[in-house]
Image 1 (cartoon, rainbow, N blue to C red):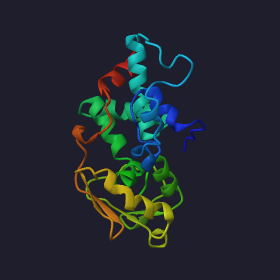
Image 2 (tube, helix red, strand yellow; image 1 turned 90 degrees about the horizontal axis):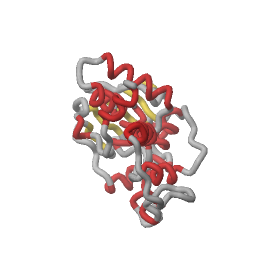
Image 3 (spheres, rainbow, N blue to C red; image 1 turned 135 degrees about the vertical axis):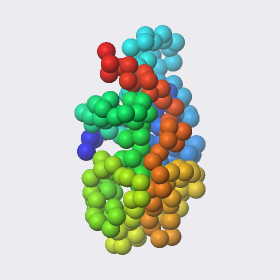
Image 4 (spheres, rainbow, N blue to C red; image 1 turned 120 degrees about the horizontal axis):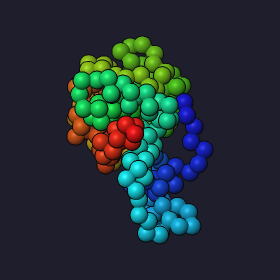
Amino acid sequence: MSCINESVCKLCRRENVKLFLKGDRCYTDKCSFERRPYPPGQHGQSRLKFSEFALQLREKQKTKRYYGVSEKQFVKYVQEANRSKGLTGTELLKNLEMRLDNVVYSLGFANSRREARQLVKHNHFLLNGKRANIPSILVAKGDVIQVSEKSREVAKVQAAIQSVARRSVPAWLEADHGAFKGTVKDLPNREDVTVAVEENMIVEYYSR
């Protein structure tokens, strides 16, 4: 699992969009992006012109940071999307959405994708009744994700369930927080991706 050692709030400011990397805090007035909605650094408030390459790079970086994957992982997803029959950009986003850590977060069992990865790695979740501790596992239609019985009193899980009302569960997922489980009703569509990203620019970046 890749590790981010810098302040994640700086990542939102650098990409000029709120990526919700700190979970519930991002919905409060403590959010750094709300207080300083400009890139960090000495020249953060300068008006800069970006080249086409720079814009493509920023879209790639934004998407990587939103889902919390490393460059090596991201390249792998791009290659898999290239081999698929659908549109490369759409297939890329679908695969990222279907990662187990993203599904755990989307169902409301974690306050952020970073927290979801940690919980998955520490054996707090079951996939179709079996222990699943690899965050990058891709779920499929009909899969059932559950919080393991021993982990239902974990403070982070409880806090996430209580605060999930701030954001909605995607239509392709069904959450039953009372039973500590969720179901993959269908595969995600392009409309289910909530971050504002131009996936075609990412494809162009890797097509150079």
